Length: 231
Length: 231
DNA sequence: GTCTATAAAAGGATAGAC
DNA sequence: GTCTATCCTTTTATAGAC
Image (tube, rainbow over all chains, first blue to last red; front, side, top):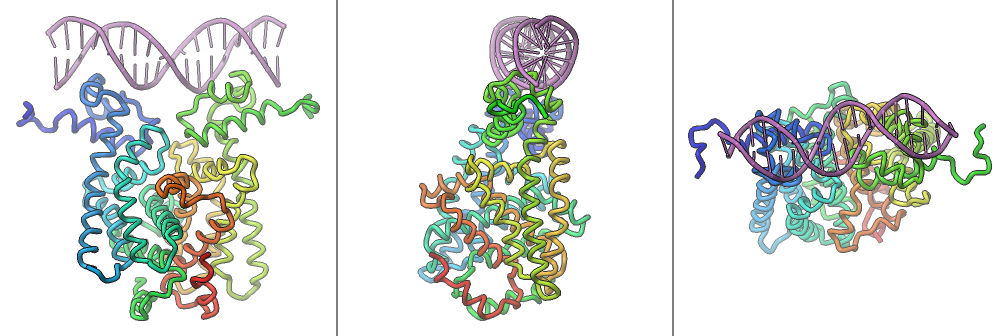
């Protein structure tokens, strides 16, 4: 109940938007509060009034995007588990619940691929403050998905499942953060613009990796996964 | 031909060692030259004498480790191509040439897992200076391996191959940089100490991902890849 | 809630003696 | 090659007027 009912955008949001934009482009340490407040057209002191410190601001920047994203993931996982009932849980469905919201959110969001890089960045940042934010935002997600993958791959030892999830997350994070690299190195032949195709590509890769050596694929699934599906 | 013949370790090496250690732990921006020279027990001005600037130092820190690493990778790839002659090139062999030296180097190197994280870090850093260093060190590697993978997977469109390499590199980089996360989240059940097992795990995952939907696996290879190989 | 002004610290870099 | 001393810039953070 503030006085901004008729204002365009509240200062707090302007700061968050500017910080998100700059941190996404340059990283946390490389962006000063002066750069953020200049970009947001607000006063330097406003940051400390609204967020207490740079650390507090950074925490909110990540939290604002990642909490709803992980909420979506958990809801999709819960829906998949309800649908499966007591029966088997499909690896691909679990993988999609984890990966698809992150990649797809970028094409729905107005700032495009920026958000994709944001979500990946927090995984790569190393400062103690960001680590705490990370643990806070991801612990529940990691535990529930690890359990789901273990259920979907009963033929594998739990440690092997955890490692494979680690590899799949690596593929996803790398895609979220470093996709301008693949564009550059392939002279534009690979682009992230076609979100649908990208989602199918990464899911296909990770499903195969998760199932490696596990003979539970039905012959139908194997056939469906063949070359005609690749463009 | 300097005067350090009888000295323990030349100043230049001490600075590089200290910088590598600290940058690995905290990242480039978070580490000051004062912290580096204190760790190395040398004078602050020595950095500018030997490397010109912080940027010059950082470049050398990465170059010192990554150039020989990539040299090893290219030699293994060349050997594989010689062995293949005019015949088909095996995806797994190419993948091993790319991934195994990076992961294995860590257990041979005295500072253990630090180097692993170093090699991955440069891929995630975003400053313009590091980007140039990256392009300088990786362009040849990327091009030769992409061509080799395309040859090993003739059934796939080149863009699809490039994407899959991107995903595999993501799994590798993530393993090099973030493996303390999996240790933490699994309460130690997953550890990076067993290098042999880790290499086999990640290779198995990536081979399956690279080959997804490609029916070129010989039945023997499929059988060999089954569950009995997983511990 | 927003602003100015300023504190207080830390950073990279360099000059010049030895 | 190495050291001390110092310059200059930038940074986060805060006090206090409005």
